[in-house]
Amino acid sequence: MEISAFRGGSDANISRPAPDRKGDEPDGRALERALVGRAQDGDRGAFGELYRMHLPAVARLVRFRLGGEDEDAVSEVFLRAWRGLASYRDTGVPFAGWLYGIARHVAIDALRRRGRDEPSEELPDGGVEPMTAEVMTLRGAIEALPTEQRQVIELKYLVGLTNEEVAAAMSTTPGAVNARQWRALKALAEILEARA
Amino acid sequence: MSADLERDLGAWAAGALSRERLVATYGAEAAGTVAVHDRLAELAGGMPIPDAEAGWAALVARIEAAAPVVPLRRHDRGRRTVSLLIAAALMVGGSAFAAVRSWTPDDPVPSRPSQVVTDVGTTFGPSDRGLVPPPAPTAPAHDGHPSSRTHHGHVGSDASGPSGTGDGSSSVDDPNDRDHGTGNDGSHDDQGGGNDGPSGSGQDGQGGNQGASGDQQGGSQGQDSQ
Image 1 (cartoon, helix red, strand yellow):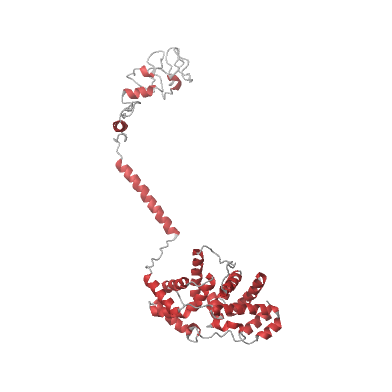
Image 2 (cartoon, one colour):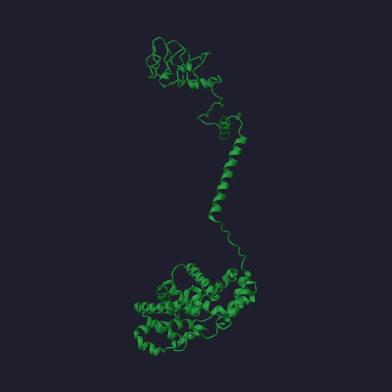
């Protein structure tokens, strides 16, 4: 998985993700297209392969957005994807980008059900586990970013798309994605430093 | 962020530039950015992933249990407006048609007040107040019915005599009635003022106060259309 290459902040080449996601393999896109086509024809097994392929990214995104594990929300993302599969058209946007849009809406709905429209940026007084605290800290900073920069960060780090895939999902160029990414990171550094 | 830093961050991401060199070149500015990058990467990589098979089984159960999705039919506003207008026109037209069909010129007054009052008395028993049924429905005016004369006598004066008594209630109508129920009759020319007689002005225009006997009541209200 591409994200795993980021782990540890090493000097390793982080542009070439580890191929633990089939969509990143050389023929991954072709395989994904074939699975999507079969799933659109009603092949539940093909959709199951897509589920296993994209579950980590969707789970990360939902967890990041909701601040904790929510299996129902993750399941809801794929349920909506299954129901809306006929509306998906492969126009160069990766299937993960389409799922990302669904996941965002599911997370928003889940937050509304919880009675809050915006994620809280304050940590609970009772204390939280370190991972949750880090999620809430970073999420609060990311929410302060402009929309395009926030999307780049989420698509790159949480969904695990490459610059080319993010560019296709956002209808822009890989160079523009790269620039937005580093501007977003610099802005995040300033926000986190100001809040520290 | 300078263009050089942005370019070198991209180079570092591509593995063409080491972290140490990047930080040494740009100092804290690059260090802060790289640190955030590390935190995000570590956070994403450290998130637990739910069990795929268990999740898939739960998802299949939801898919199979899901009710059939009925797509929303969204009409555009123009079509909806036209539909509402047509429905309203049909409703108004239908109501008008039904009213015309059910009405005939010979239809009596639809209510039956005397029957209603009788029914009330029967139902609730006698009362000290003595319910008096109102008069039965009357026919249109000018039918010679006494009630109509009595009614109309209040607004005019019956000039039965040369001086015009103005007492509409006790008057006897002239066979050559021309007052159309206003109470003025005869050869007077008081313009409805109720005064008539040798000394009446006939054109007093002030409610008939100049007659010989002076009509003080009926003439004051009468405005004969003649």
